[in-house]
Length: 193
Image (tube, rainbow, N blue to C red; front, side, top):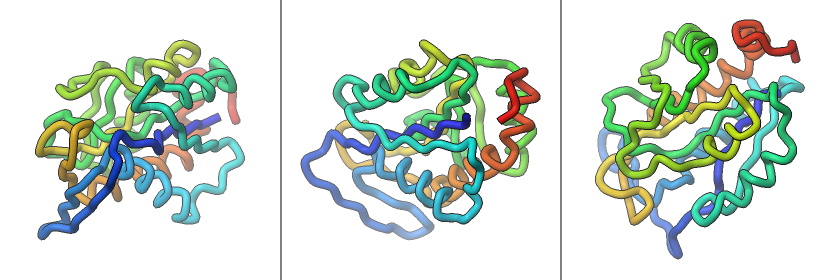
């Protein structure tokens, strides 16, 4: 199963978003930008696979309660992509973090080669290094973080900015991974869906 996990809770009591010149969005993006990217992928019409599951979780901003609940339903052979914001500095459209499995990292580099991204086995985000990947990694080996790069401050504390093309690129990455999931399974030695 390809599981896409994206927390839908926020740490803010009010929300605002403004469109700036040059395709920039500024506002409370943690984690509405991740939810938007996942929903764009879902509503693209390309998510027709019966091995796909989307989880919009709660409690990430407090204690990861939603991710802990999802963890109970996962199988060790599941592949989990966590979609969220990241403070990792980059000029690329998105960042893949905490992709610790060499075979998975190799597959993602090849499959997503037409997109602009950085990929790391660890988490270089200077704002926060704890997220839902840490929960899912307790059971699943093939877990990674798809990060929407944001800038302009602490995304947990207030408004930050991102490029709208980053959201579009993550949406495209999700679609590609879903479409090529049987190949991912072969590359990682997992059962076919």
